[in-house]
Image 1 (cartoon, rainbow, N blue to C red):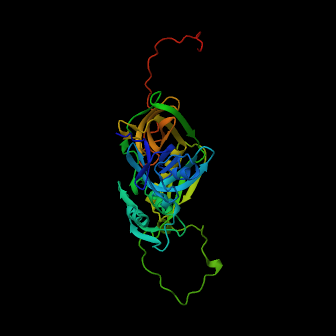
Image 2 (cartoon, helix red, strand yellow):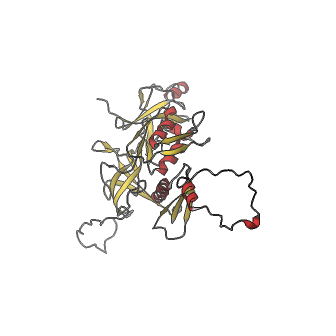
Length: 401
């Protein structure tokens, strides 16, 4: 039985097996999954070198549909975006890269000749209408809350931007499933196939810690369309009325009345208690907002900024554990003595790579509450590390071999 390559590129139903390096990546922050291969270009080799051997020939050009398989399972369906052929005196090779089908949402406009807004739609219905022209399926795994009274599409915004602004105000995640669909979900419903431990199964660990994008308070201000309560009636026009003399006008502070404020303005405020300096940030809600959606968006922005400020990448051998692949949006227990981590973490990125040195998976991890709305509790606190009893006293006179 022929051995199945750990990573396979399939074009037009045929598997290309002449690559020298391969990588496929899923990242919750990048939306679209991506792939890259460096491989021998059979067509160009045969045309260039008299001594070139044959093999499966492919039309490797931008726009060609492609599939990527891990351990025999299809994990990505998309298109080749970029092709870079190179040649020297001994070989002709080509590097290609691409994304899954949702890459078109990132690059393309949401609005051309369709409706400029949807009314009284739930998030999943708005996403379905935006994704429909691209041939993408949409499924929701969560309750997305109240319908939007008005879901507007800006003339120049991309389809991804139009989707992302709605999901943010409902504290939901819209992720690509890699194979032609979108999933509306939240984080951490499944556990990873194994714990991640150093010392242990981790062969490399790196961290990125920065407070540059964190803020003490995150404000989201939005605007609604309805008055805070029903008006008593329409004001009648008086054809005999004249403008007031400036001296007869009442002095005011320019603020709106309480009724007007409730009806036209919504503010959400999220506090990051770990940032002790005065570092506020204000964002304008890009969809019609009420108090709930403004608060959800403020909390979502604060949590994601905090999560991005503390990311760890752990490298392990292979792509799977007991036949189960490492995947994004799963919870893994991390025990990393070097990074000082002893708790559950959320896998936000998975990069599988294969080359002459072997097969490896890079797991990008963040704090587990980074994308959800559940109480933080103790999820940002390390557990007590279990230490092994020392085998004996250290010899202070010992020298390195």
